[in-house]
Image 1: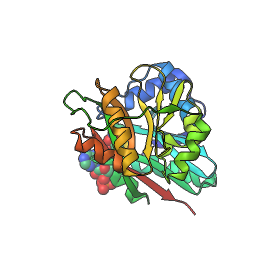
Image 2 (image 1 turned 30 degrees about the horizontal axis):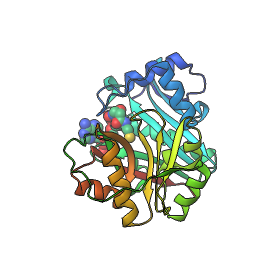
Image 3 (image 1 turned 135 degrees about the horizontal axis):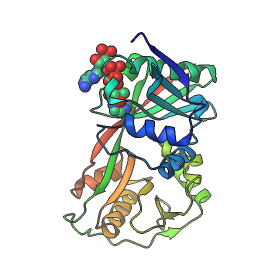
Image 4 (image 1 turned 45 degrees about the vertical axis):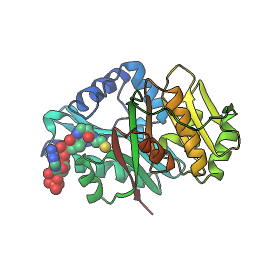
Length: 272
Ligand SMILES: CC(C)(COP(=O)(O)OP(=O)(O)OC[C@H]1O[C@@H](n2cnc3c(N)ncnc32)[C@H](O)[C@@H]1OP(=O)(O)O)[C@@H](O)C(=O)NCCC(=O)NCCS
């Protein structure tokens, strides 16, 4: 498109960012509409730096964006989308290329993102050098009404400090996706970290009733069975859990008739 140009999002103000976000995500697989409060929370939680993020313009309007978060020498695309009226016109590749060039100028070694398996955006990511790392399972208020009651007895989980939880998780060799990395989890207020009696499984949730599960891991199958049974017992009304790597927890949920709502591919582009 001849009248196309790219800039950073440095100058955008919150109300304009909300308008752009809501306009561009229309027609996506999920409702992504944000209020200004949601938007502010998302940008802060993700530590998105608007000066490192890209806007694509046609004439005098921004018609697409890519948001970038940076931690040390890693970057993460916290959302990217094109206005539905401007899709299918070849704008996505130049948008992503501009984002990667900026990441390169920032001296980043890697850029990560997640994409739903069925999303054709993946084609563009691959064409500019991203490759798939692993699949991540997404549970969105999976109903547990029909899940059988677990036969195993669950010993009480105990609340532990986040630092101790993260240490145990590290020892279990759990490789966290971006939104479960240490720094990201530490930015939540009001979270509760729980661990089983022998330290082989852990879970983080928001303290509110039926809040989303922010993280869950196990170091062995017994731990996975225990934590899955705990979820099944206490979350009868359903639960949300994003980006679970394919592990024993996914397997035990499946054995109990609980299937992921969708799957994402975690992708990475190495810039070194
Ligand atoms: C994904 C998205 C950004 C792609 O933008 P776009 O402007 O439609 O993409 P482009 O026109 O640049 O096309 C990119 C490629 O996808 C292909 N493509 C476009 N629409 C397609 C469709 N509906 N189905 C399959 N392939 C499609 C194009 O042919 C092109 O491939 P090519 O370079 O080999 O010709 C856009 O559809 C969108 O905003 N979707 C909603 C938000 C979203 O999914 N964001 C990504 C989250 S990870």
